Image (tube, rainbow, N blue to C red; front, side, top):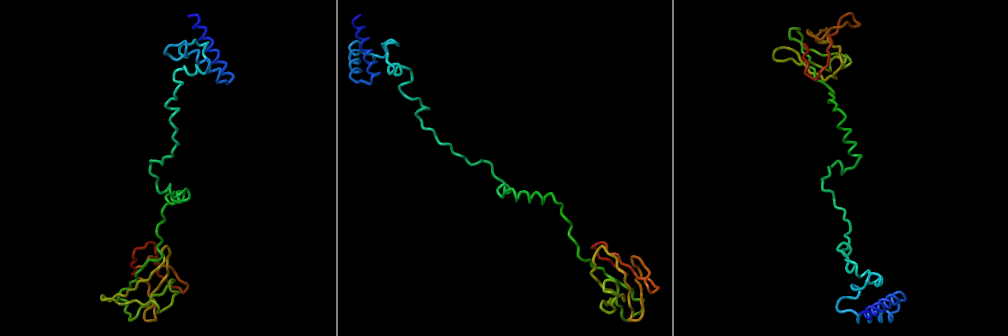
Length: 211
């Protein structure tokens, strides 16, 4: 028993010196001595920790013989997955378009501008005239270019487009000789000739009936 232990000691020493000096012959001699002193189990399992070489100690540690699953499995490269949430059209368009859309939403809608309003001028047939012309600020008081037409009921009538938000002075010229004011104007104002003018106020796009 003592002899076997001594041989085991020499074998371990040879293995250690062979490993330390990188001498395969000394290491092989140590392995042969150890093989003679063991039965079936590996030499490293029967040696005391102080008799084992660093190789035996490393080999004898649990889990040192084969790598773990995490060490052996190659790491998968990180893949950037596309976002699952859907992008809105404004986000795809970019910040400039989003700012423009926000500005349009914040700006109140302006009412449509009415360029002109149709105003109908009417004079009753009782004025006793064969021709009636409309003169006023809207045609520089030119006689004859805006003529009224006589309807089936005998009244005279014409329609003129006027700009809203203004008031206009006007009068009727009968047969090119005498002046006649509207019978129901918005108001009447004096003129430089010592008489009065009819006044129409155009304040809404609705049809104005002047008589």
